[in-house]
Length: 290
Image (cartoon, rainbow, N blue to C red; front, side):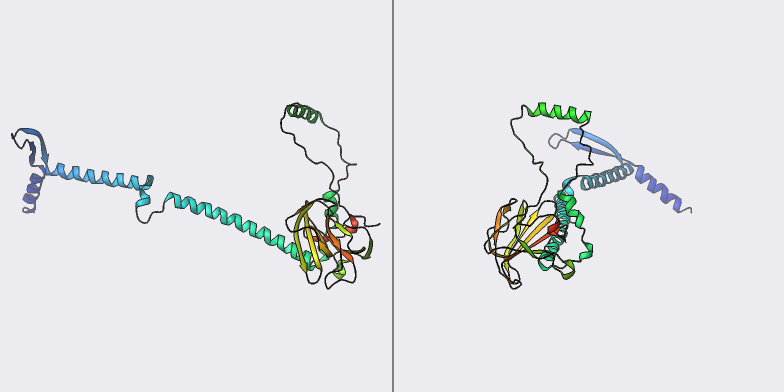
């Protein structure tokens, strides 16, 4: 114990022993600056500077863009691109699922593979016919005031706008005798209308042609997509006057009556009507009589 005590005293003396740091002019040896230092002060100051340097470095790496230049850290731009790509992938997956459902409905239209017990025959009727007898159409006071306000604003509007408010109706594609009725039990999801060869076939409603091709079984086939998720199908045509992507209006000629395809016994139109992916009886909504 007696030996350890002198050692501690000598160490303490070394740490607290004062030194002078002098900065001189080399030419004149004039004293410019001098500092009184001890070894303990030097150790404390050095430790403080090291800790400060570590804190500043950590701050620069964590809260500035300098970390992008350090190996192992990803850049903000890459993270932004990854988030955008992830959102695009999610959107594309939704589009793929929607297109798969849509293509499955089109496949059912072409092949007739559908369960008749799932058909809601009233859904199409509600989609394009509105019974206004039970609806109170008397305008309220707020509605009248709003109409007057809008009318005053539109009086000085330079751009003329117009919206169609007509009821949604179906146009008979062709007039003639029905040779085969709609019979889902026998998987005949259509009606066959007999008419002279080359009789014009007309679009049943406004829409877009989504299929216009030749098939071995049903000859020249044309499919139109209409509003309210309605699809009309025209088979066994002699010729087609519209191509895929064309816009058509109700009553516009789209094909001519024919006898094409293997599954036909004479000039007629095989007409199908599909709503929400399910077939419906066209005679419930269209009058085909001459």
